[in-house]
Image (tube, rainbow, N blue to C red; front, side, top):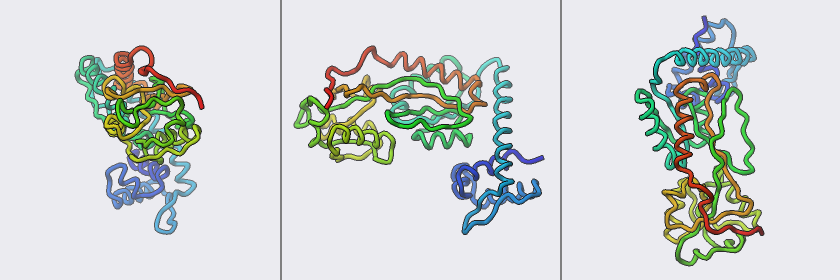
Amino acid sequence: MLSVPRLRLLSELHHRGTIASVAQALSYTPSAVSQQLAQLERESAVPLLERVGRGVTLTPAAVALVEHAEAVFARLELAESELTAAQAEIRGTLRVASFQSVVLALLPGTVQLLRDRHPHLEVDVTQREVAAAYDGLRSSVFDLIVGEEYPDEAAAVHPGIDRVELLSDPICLVLPAHGPYSAVPRTLADLAHTPWALDPVTAPTGAWARAVCRRAGFEPIVRFDSPDPLVHAHLVRSGLAAAFMPALLAPEHLDGLQIIGLPGEPHRILYTAARSGRAARGDVAAFRSALADAIAAQSPPGAPWSHSLGPR
């Protein structure tokens, strides 16, 4: 009988490409990964790995074995879901990955609701950006992730993933309440000479922000490059920059800023994702229900801004 843990290492190597990256992701040493894969190769009695330069690649037999292994993983998760459904109460530990604005705005209320409803369920939350969160979800490091999708961003296809949309969250312009950058512009192009606080260009959010400015006819002057929305808000509040922010942060974290609607009313989509075999588990369903209720309690009626920019 082939070892399921060793099959998982082979699957990880297929997706990640190097033994070092598998070891880092799963908290093994590279030598331990190599030893386990060598043992799997002996168990299977066929070559699974080929040396290529200083690395390894999977043989055709290994790739075929990975396909069978991933079907086994999915089936085992379905079996676990059925077993947990028979339990009288939801218990255990749910491992969740989310990104910062959701952690700030929604996670406290969600976790409190879960404590009230399911006192024997523990929730471990790790802050990760979406790409890294999906990577951990596929590797079973996380049971569920909260993700976001920005306008113009092509939705990635993730086979074997159950995705549930949560919220369409408006994206707005924020300006200082006082100082040289506080004048409300007629159009976004009027901010061509204003300094900006934006996410890094390598992040989908940062790429989107720069594309919005370019479509308005200017290259933004990015004086502050940071992935932290609270840093953006602090810099705007200090009168040093303009920024784009999700409206979800408005009730508690954008106080003292001018919040202005953008042309076309762009939105980001928030969603949860779980492996299909685990989506029916009670802990996943309980988290999704509590998160939806936290959103309903948090979201104020109507748009959070008093002005909207006109088109170019």
